[in-house]
Amino acid sequence: MSNHDSYRKHFFERGWCRFEFDEAIAAWIESALPFARKAVVAEEFSRWLRCEGTWFVGVNALPNRADGSVGTGPGLQGELVDFIRQELYTDHFAWDAAQVSVFYPGYPRPKESESEKAFQYRCRRDAAHVDGLLPEGDSRRRHLREHHGFILGIPMVEYDQNTSPAVIWEGSQELVRSALSKRFNGIAPGEWSHEDITDSYHAVRQQVFEQCNRVPIVACPGEAYLIHRLAVHGVAPWRNGAVASADGRMICYFRPEFLDADGWLNSP
Ligand SMILES: [Fe+2]
Image 1 (cartoon, rainbow, N blue to C red):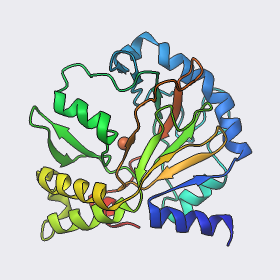
Image 2: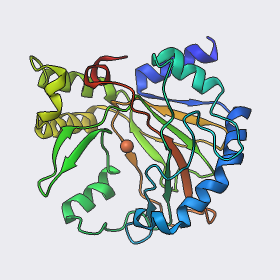
Image 3: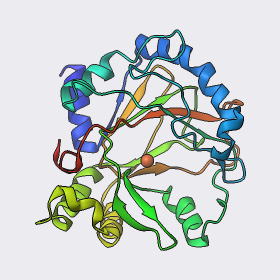
């Protein structure tokens, strides 16, 4: 089986895949890392430091262009970009400004104005979620608000299983697809954002915890991983004694939005 075929099989069956080391990604990191480090300490992004300083959320904090390039560096290219274009039907899309996601020793700590229940969920269930189904208001009711095409994680520094890796529930994307297809049955896609889908979402998440394998995703700089947009994923707690550099566990995430509601739910 070619690399491409094994990536495809892994991605569509399990909801994620890890790409082997690629010089093109290593070159991108070399140009992007100084900008990511700058973002973490920038005054304008200080609001992104949460949970008693153990989590830099960093949404859209990397100043990359639509081709992914940063500074005088190269755009995003290589095997994983070819894979995205071929398998996710995205000939033309612009790279969004990447999230610079950093975790530090001690995560998780309570978040400002967070309920005890929500904090416990982050501790016990890795803050597991599906992107785009945003909780709103005090009652955290959920609606489909964003239609990301995929989630691409590019590790910027070395890290390991103990330093808050991303975790994924393998195969969860098809359980989520089936639950939301039922929930939205008979409703035009243009109306889906008005539907409160909290109950269906909680039910399928529970089903995912019971039926799917929870797998930590660890990758080296130069490797990268792709997560299916419908997959349940989260972040593991930092384990006591785990060692990391001053950069912490730094990963850049791209989540371009190029789908409509129908494409978000029904594309492969
Ligand atoms: Fe996410």
